[in-house]
Length: 507
Image 1 (cartoon, one colour):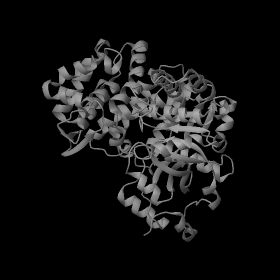
Image 2 (spheres, rainbow, N blue to C red):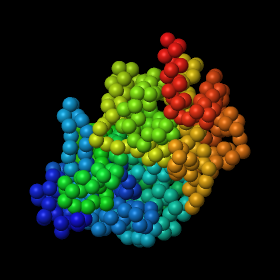
Image 3 (cartoon, rainbow, N blue to C red):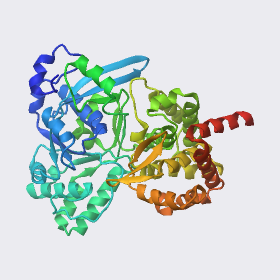
Image 4 (cartoon, helix red, strand yellow):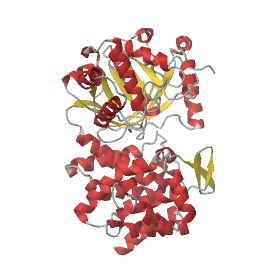
């Protein structure tokens, strides 16, 4: 079976997939995107493709990848195209759609094609920057923007913007709308502050500093779509047999989508793709969207992933179908996280959003793997859950038990027992798993020399990690330590089951 490509398209007219028209490949590059991940392919890139098909945005995306190899070869082989398989239920109707996206024009490697990337800065059609470099991507690190390439994402972006400033001699009409999609609060504001600080540290001229601030707009944004990416081998084989081609970039996605972007009418006009889907919202205040999504959907994922994975569940849906884990996840979201949201929210609105999220978790068509959610576990815990925990204590001054149980499972998941090729691995259910967290070495060291009670106390007291001494929250440290010890003795799943048995007996 041949791979998806432009030359193959002519033979696919009877395939159950929406194919792009030939004229879409001639559209100018209007977007530069940092990142090739499945979320970008399944949300921003998908929306731009949808708008192009309707003759609205009329622009393509040049993508910057930090390293060589990987999906660069797949994009080149497939002429930048890939298939999004949308599966879900909306308003009681089953959604089963396949779309070949053609919004990506080319993928360039920052490592080996940096000069080619900088040439894109002189493109007069360019209007938009999109990024998703994970939560650790938007950080200020010492960086020389004259390196080829700079080390960090903000360094690369600043070098690109400086090249654009030089190419157009400071023309303020050539500034860009910059929309980071990394899941951190105020992502656009933080990125802008880092860019300005890096420009200062690199000694760039004041005229550029003025242009950077006045001509460019960094928008806070929030993305919400479950995009697991490539399915398991059996599902992939079934889909490709139906489609009639191989696709190394085939991307599974749920039907629901939300992209909330903070911006004015000018931003709305430039991001004209927002017209094609009600899930794209451009407005001056997006805090409500951010808090609901960050605290309820992502917060629930983060506090559940370790516990569910250690309990032997590979996918979110499988855990939701289990009475014990499904009840835990529901209680965690609606009893602990919802009342702890550190933002004024109408509880009925939050409840409705939470129930909608639960339905999305149960989506029978999407296999979202728990191990993927554990990536950068510590950073996610800090950003998504600690503010909720602190606000919960402010309101109730009591232990949110599901949060304590989820935190204990996080500590156990971070128990690295072996290191190979700079990656730590743990053991669970008779198999090895990767710990993809920049703090993995810190936890491996603690587990090697402390008992579980000492470890829990040490981690909870670490203000560098959490911004707070969490042992000062009455009862929280003891509860986390008790749950951790029970999981070490009996296992993760029996500990959750015992928790609910205890609740039943208490009634």
